[in-house]
Length: 149
Image (cartoon, rainbow, N blue to C red; front, top):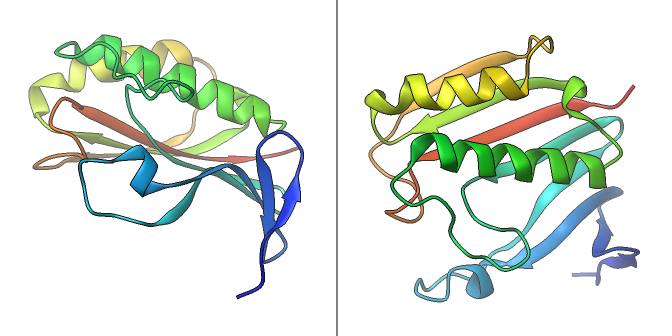
């Protein structure tokens, strides 16, 4: 396979699309036997696709707000806003969100934070309750799609 073209600010271009913050899961999840090449975001045309965001600092990989669904959601949205900014987008450009919860009882706390951060945006939402996320301490994960103007 052809080596990806390097770009500025931790970006690469593969298949004509820009990958933001590329990484390999062997570095992100050293306790798991994985080796997938992924990116935190992909810009394809004028559409921005964000990887599912969890309560983890994107630079240090430190988990945040363990045991606090609202606190985890605030970190998730901080990550979303940061990544969108790196892609040239803002929260107002969000068109779709998928929200994954590990317990339906977290819905009010999580959606409360999401509503505060996305007030006036009116994206479509899909909410799912799942058995678990990639790490047991994570209770919420949000994927986002945005469209650049």
